[in-house]
Image (cartoon, rainbow, N blue to C red; front, side, top):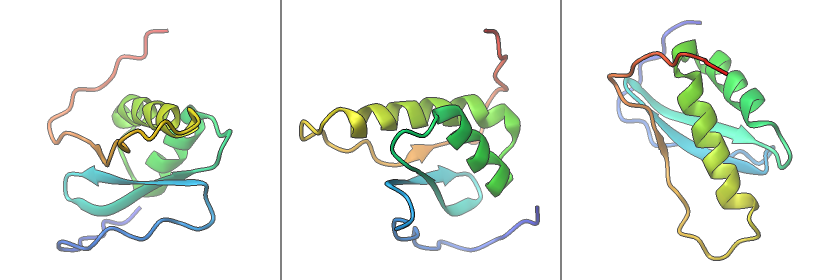
Length: 100
């Protein structure tokens, strides 16, 4: 995975190949976007996103939580909710300890 450095690029348009597209704000990595289809598993979506974009695996837990929250917003039959906005990955993060 090579580093791509772009200054202040606008977020990409929603991907027409997926049911859902959300912008992701990651320090030093503008313009990221996470996509999935209705019925996809949040863990798989998060894992694919991390691998495709070179996101450290210690961020996986944060991504999974975001996807689960977003899925809850979009799959709940509407209700006019105020659309959660972008996922923001903090620049100072601590690795998740996967204790399950």
